[in-house]
Length: 372
Image (tube, rainbow, N blue to C red; front, top):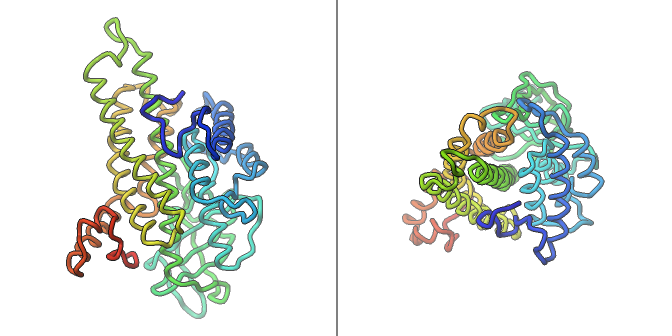
């Protein structure tokens, strides 16, 4: 059950909402709830790919919701899926497949399968080199490569090189939530790559950051719901924890940070309706990343403090939500990176004759040029 201060916006999973997206919300909630129930009670230090959940998503058309032309779904519909599955800790590469892999493969004109999951391995400019007609290097923190087809994106100085590979990982790692993240070594003929404009690489990172913002909000929603339930049900000195003033203050601060985060993510979703390559989306994603960077620390820390020792055990659902949020916040650019970007654009606006305040709050986007 969602508490009143968690409800609202396009992410509201309440069944009594009467709008065009109510059916999608209900479907995602049902799929996520069944996946959570199946996984209940198991230690989850390392996440295994949920084949059953993925099959359900494929059969229901949600695995390629925004990348399938016949479904005519956009960022709002995809956000509901990403947020809902994150709320239930779905162990599937849904953002990597739909928003990143399918989009990039289609943009590059690469053939890609319709049902298996996809992922994108990104090599930065300092992680590769060209020699003798070949491109070699490493791509770090590539997610879910053991279960997904891999689209390799190499960010060169003035272009993005894209190809499909089947590369072994040189280092199988995991993020804080136990999700697989690997380092891939590649050595591919340069003729195998499709060369795209460097701005496609900028959009790829922006799409990834946007997806993680939506997913983080879902994880934080669950962390807050679990905390509210725990403080209500846990008794201390003859009354529930939620009756203590200090606990109420902590919950109020958590709620404030969460709703501030929700507002910024909702803005990013709305902006993306105009395209992920627009100045509006760049600004909104930048602002959301900065806002969530602050909210993640407050919400996760407060949640664990109010749960006490039980909240740090791997079997507890809280651990899954908070560790996902803490892991995702640094992917596709850290909070510090986006904070610097926001500051740079604001200073540029002041020097270029624009109102820096308008650039900072997003009412004037003339100062927002290509990402640095």
